[in-house]
Amino acid sequence: MKHIPISRRGFIKGTAGMAGMSLAASSGPALGARGANEKVVMGFIGTGGQGTAHIKEFAKMDDVAIAAVCDVDQSHREGAAKAAGSSPKQIKDFRELLDMKDIDAVLVATPDHWHGIAAIEACKAGKDVYCEKPMTHNIREGRLLLDAVKKHNRVVQIGTQQRSSQHWINAVNRIKAGEIGKIHMVHVWHAWNSKEMRGDLDHPPDQPAPPKGVDYDMWLGPAPKRPFNPLRFHWTFYFFWDYAGGMVSDWAVHLFDVVCWAMGPDIKSVSMVGGKYAFNDARDTPDTAAAAFECPGYTMAFTIKHDNGWQPHGSGGGHGIEFFGQDRTLQINRRGFQIYRDEDRGTRKPFYEEKGTTPLFDHERNFIECVRSRKRANADARDGYNGQIPCHLANISYRVGGRRLYWDAKNETILNDPEACKLLTRTYREPWVL
Image (tube, rainbow, N blue to C red; front, side, top):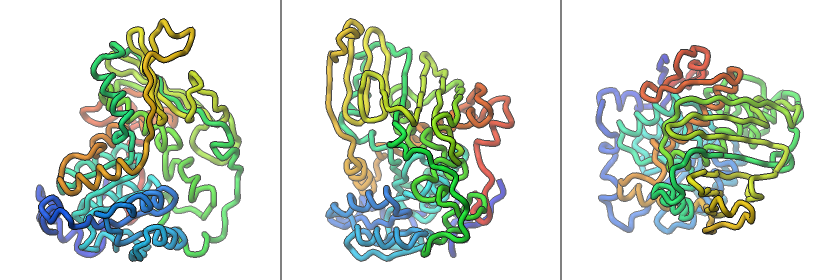
């Protein structure tokens, strides 16, 4: 893709002759080499619901200082500054935040179509990055971010917080130890009723202008230019391909990441079919879908529905994973996990059960500790890349009519399908071109 500079002053100039070098080296010693009591100074890019939730958690940490909050929506900026409780600088353009030399790390919680650009530019600026999931809007962006992380030697944490939650860790360890035998099938599911999924979103008309205090052109960024529509904005943007990949990539990524963690990231092929069967509204992405993955030594099924909350075994929580091994099954979600023996299928009583929670705080603490130590984070960029591959491939299959796609992981491409390959990246609106 053609490269058009998108950074503020000095970014391109400052990196032109530094191939193979880390920008961190030019911005002082790593935090691990500084005083143990020195605070990690943070900036937040994207301060809507999830972004402000993070701010509230980081504000509890004595060794973290919140220096700046950035959002294109003035109301979000003001709310985030209030949540921080430290009178941070309020910024509209993330490049201005990245220019702040005192900021050590940033958290990116923008809509998905901004994740890759903001995270890559943060790496170039010598900042460590906590980036919400999915790591990037598309697979090609993920590769570019991996390259930036390596080149600039940054610590990156992706917001798949299961990686820092004890019952998930214990379950994965049991799977890897062979406690449920050789796994031959995995089932990943979401099951939400219409109320939980905001019901029918209707077809609201375009508006003559965005809400007051919103820089809508900046919100669109690399996405196509179009009139403002409230449905393609806060809270519901993830139902449109221009900005996200629906619940397949915005939520199932949590679960696919756990499968990659437990089973490895290898995928041979995938096919996903579905449609808008529950709602007749303006969304692009399916409200009902089923995918089949061919993986080395096992198959993986994925199902999602937005109109019926019934779940396997009545497990609750709206989501889950089942790992089917030899005569034993491990079922897990954010509330805990259970192991069932095949002989228990009549009673549905687990052979072993462990309850748990999945808080943001533990994952955030791991990030701060790794910023200091320069160690690998629990969900680093490679994990984020691997975990989003199933999501993006399933969506690509759906968008090309549900046909089976064969994934070439070595070359990071889809075999013998030019139409599908085009969806490995996107067309970027200038000047936001990677």
